[in-house]
Image (cartoon, rainbow, N blue to C red; front, top):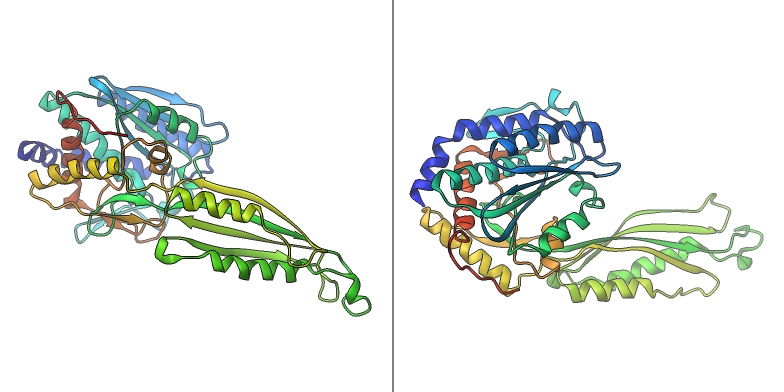
Length: 382
């Protein structure tokens, strides 16, 4: 393990150049041309690392990249995304820069530095003569819901022994052994319009009914169990002197278990109006199931912790409130470990950065975990 870390440390110039090249190729999720420019560069670099690269159509989004590295055994899936939340041009006001041992730039923490460390890990294993079979899947729409990539992710996961997700680590560098499931619902109330002054009894206010429903939904919250429900956008009505005929709310739901996801979803779908003159329509659902801390997830984490210890570091674990594509793989029962990307801070914020001296360790950590599956009968029960 010390040799693996030393090799990765010696390759820091390569690693930094790779990270900076990817960050300079800005790739906002909604800009297909920009994403594909970044993908073309990433594909070239994956090929140079020994991968057999395929571009997978993303429809109206950018093309996803699959890179296969031949080796022993059933494949291990390395997963992440190269789309970002930053528009093209933000580099002019948020340039790449180094300060106090940190490298700043849009998309560097979430998650282009993670992609680069994954490539370095594969190079390190090749140099050491250890070749587990690896499939990398880098997608282009994770930041906007993974609608064009989810089927691809689940297809690869079903064929894999485990999924290793290069999303950023938790504060302090801990891995993520659980993530909340995420959903968005649109709650629409249809009421009856009437003159608010002349005929108030003939109307049925959609706004008043919506308010009742929002208050009732608060009773479903249980932060101690990881259940949060937030009506984040509310609209309705036309004029102050007209009883509102329609009102709607967009509701964010977060849950920690699949059982709670099903229960909350069913509750929302079965809402009944307090005022029978109104009608409720609910659309949406839980679109990212939770990543639960299962026995298989814990075993995979223990392997990573053992590797980290051999490298002279301590690897903690924790939970994240947001979702990633690892939620999809874990929900299929595939052992999944998330948050293997670098230490840093500022995801989606202008102070986004990674810690430079952590980068070689992250590559060595991933390489060490992968090497446990090369020539060894590591078995992870699903």
